[in-house]
Amino acid sequence: MYTILLVDDEKLELDAIARYIRWEDMGISVVGTARNGREALRMQEELRPDIVLTDVRMPIMDGLEFARKAKQFDKNVKVVFLSGHDEFQYIKAALTMEAMGYLLKPIDKAELAQLMERVIRKCEEDKQLSESAEGLKEKLVRSLAAESSAETRKEWVRRIAMLPRPLPPTGDYIVCLITWDEANDRERADVLASLASGWSELNGSNYMWEADERRFGAIAYLDGDSGTESVWRFWGKALEEIRGRTGIVLTIGLSTEGRYLEQLPELWGEAREANAAKFYEGTGTVLPYEAEPRRETAAVRPAAVAERLGHAVAHLQTEAMEAELAGFFAPFRKSRTRREAVIADTMQLATEISRRFSPLLERQHGAEAIEPDWRAITEPQSLAQLQATLADWCRRMMDRIREKDHDKNLPIIHRIRELIDARFSEALTVEELAAGVYLSPNYIRTLFKEKTGQTILEYMTKVRIDRASGLLRNKSLKIHEIAKAVGYENVSYFCSLFQKHRGVTPNEYRKKLL
Image (cartoon, rainbow, N blue to C red; front, side):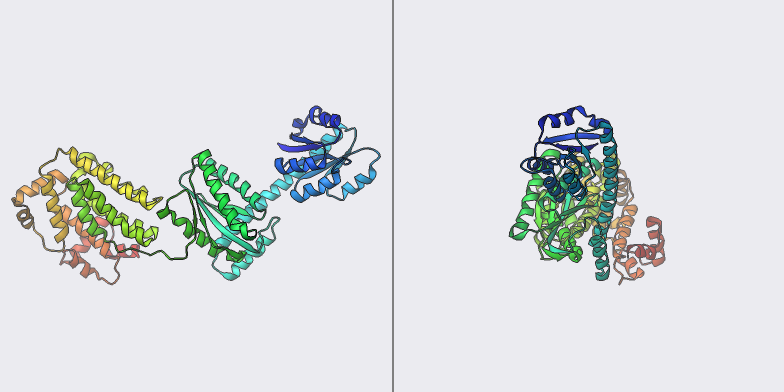
């Protein structure tokens, strides 16, 4: 339903138009009435009606001046004039202002209905044109933001300039990247609509678009010295208001200032980098871009940490477990390592720990009960959340170990696995393992199978194949060198065993990795 603002200085006539004409039957809702042009202009800015029906002759500000200013504020508003029989000179002036038409007093209802039908049809046409243009604008802006070619950027800027509501090709501006933790489609649409409305009020040239399902982009054109400050104030207020109203936590990344629209890809990249700092700073805040590059990796050795962390978990040492995790994540935090590198090292650590404890706990509790939350590990909102995910998982495994009633044989199993993990590259025998735990070979064969569901040979093979899979990432190592490094002198046997466990040959596996 479209909205209309009624303007007439004659109170009786204004009330009659508002109350006795069946506007709703025409698909129109009366949102306000005003007695003069000045009051009408204030109401238009507040109510943003689609249609204005205004008398021509009024005190304070007449209908013609009001219509001119109304069109300046909203060029799409549809204006219809009212006039008396003796006001032809006003009607003539009105027709030069792109008015939709005029009506003579007293209003003929049939004539009014016919005119309003034409007005609504024009509203529909303009709406469809606007939606089509806005859709094209969003596509062009998304394309420009991702473009690396200077020549192609110029083409995107040229096309944007041809739109009904283009973005200024020059002018000081910054780019913002808005993300949130969780939101469904409806919540996301509501948030975007709410932000976009306030964003355009901040500056008429400002623009906001949906970059993808989890991100909004925004361009803020700056007004003088207070431009950047006004952007910070807007986002500070928006974060608080949206969180209080919907519970959705937004994080905003801000770029440095640019001058030309062709700089959008660089500024979008800066906003993306700034937003990514939430991994260390936490969500729900505004983060400016910092030029200092983040390190690709930190001096962390997941395998060494896994050894100590596994020992702490196996011996139910909660404080030691938490200390190991804190020590593991501290170098990342200090060097501000890139999120992707942190996730990769954390996955390696979790894989090592899972491999150590799955044989011990899987038979009693099932694989799902002791598997880490891989989604939380691969999609963490922050480093603190990632550390908490691993700590919770380790506590869960420690609880499962306690549930085994402190089985006196668990330390034996753990020691056998430690020996295999440390000496898998050797021609290790069951007899040597038995000597390492001061038991007979037959006894440890039976015990290991009973407690883990695997034979010692099966576990040793799994360790070797896992290590070989990691070594295949190194292109400088030949297949026979990898085979020897994991304890196999016979390369053909190694390749056959690898294919049995991975479903592909070592060379095929390497091609997939690289």
